[in-house]
Amino acid sequence: MSGEPRRILVLGGDGQVAWELRRALATLGEVVAVGRRTVPHGVDFLQPATIAPLVEAVRPHWIVNAAAYTAVDEAEREPEAAMAVNAVAPGLLAEAAGRVGAQLVHYSTDYVFDGTADRPYREDDAPNPQGVYGRSKLEGEEAIARAGCDWLVLRTAWAYGVRGHNFMRTMRRLAREREELRVVADQVGAPTWSRHIAEATAQVLAQLGDDRAAWHRACGIYHLTSAGQTTWHAFASAIVEHQRQHEAIPCRQVTAITTADYPAAAQRPAWSVLDNGKLAATFGIRLPDWRVALAQVQEELDETRLQVSGRA
Image (tube, rainbow, N blue to C red):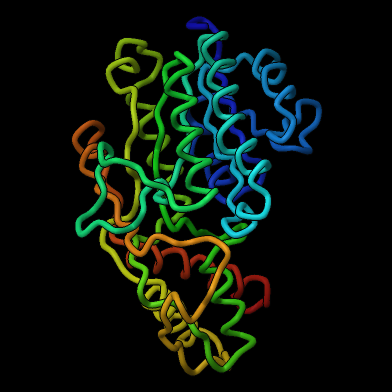
């Protein structure tokens, strides 16, 4: 493949990370972004037979898999679907990557841990997922490692951005509809902007390039989250406070509640803070503090809102 223009296969359709990847990777090669409804080469991870033909048709140099079953509570009710998308499909994708000589980057999650730690989780800490979603993502990591291709797994957490279904967009919408928001205050993590996830991925790929020896040395799991830590309640409070300064909203209070006050089908980790030291040591990459990123995202949304309203 060394003499051909580099092709980068991005899986995940219009998901928030996949959408950012399309921009972040554009200078590194020809990006082929694929989702379930992409023509002519759609791929549906619920139908594993669609995976190998796609990889064979595109014959990418790199594959970046941002496709996932992320409905944590639904996973408890649909374990077969979650396992198919998050566990079986990544393994088949890694096998297909190996057959065409491609390298694979795959995203995983803090939910592989049980959330009982008292320090940031490192990559070599023992996983102990507490629900179907976490188990499915862990099995996906393991399937990729067994497949034999060159691979990187980037574990991230609390991802949000300007597109897709995520916590920040939900809070902004609810703040326009309600006088009070009730948000869990006993779960701790690091909100991570999807654009920073994509840009960090691009930096990693740019450093490794097509050097197979470098890929062999780097192969493994890395944690990739914003610096700092906070609670969902404090995250929501920061979102609403910024929003209140830039538009008239009815929300006047963000009330702290406990996890027990908000029962859900799936258990959430109380502690989702990941140690990003391995990523920094290997690639020199450190994401900024979550508050810096949130300010940038909200400023972008404010500008977009003003342009749409004709007041820019």
